[in-house]
Length: 98
Image (cartoon, rainbow, N blue to C red):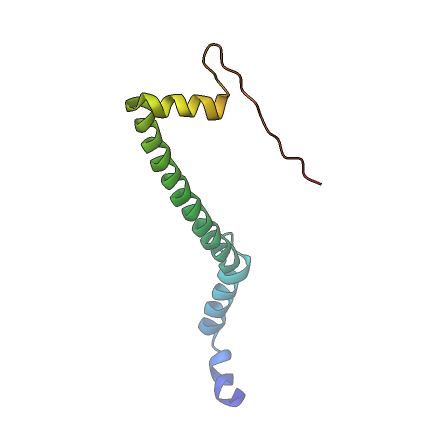
């Protein structure tokens, strides 16, 4: 098999093309290794983008609910910011972990 390739490997154009491909695959700024890393980075960023878009939709729906329903606004204020009405006491029960 090597004997069949030997005449082609002596050709200066084949050597130049092989050298060019080796240079582009391993030594160039845009080599294959960097391209693979970029593809994986892009996939991760697309997943993050989808996650944040879903979170934005969920938060937008909650915001609309808070703006339109006063009882949900009161519930939100009590749960998140521990707000209370006049003459009302709040007791917090905190579980201690061992």
